[in-house]
Length: 171
Image (cartoon, rainbow, N blue to C red; front, side, top):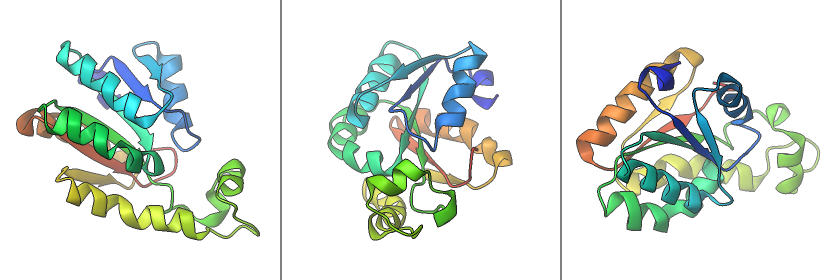
């Protein structure tokens, strides 16, 4: 709802299970054009092009994918001063029994434990945002959606990327 009120028309993502409910909602709504990128860096490039062309978008990626966007962010929106909002889902903060089965298999987790790769990703997200000097807020409940207008305003103010780290199920 917040994205619609702000006039955001494009939802750019690399499909993942954590953000699937939000992506499916945007697809059903019809107000958004959902663009599925092959790689997180591609999502950054697509959103940069949309913004340069005058359209607001939101980039929705998992934090494990966010780690792969460092060069694309540095060379694109950070250096070129392109306002951008990232919604980064928080793989690594989930309780072990909430993690999707294919995610557990992907990280070789046996017996329902969170696994070192997943937990490490959860610990690095905010540190990497700080290192890149990207302002961020942490959305911890569905009513934390007030961060969305803040993020768009802040991105325009600083002429660069701003992140919302989504730390709640199906927010």
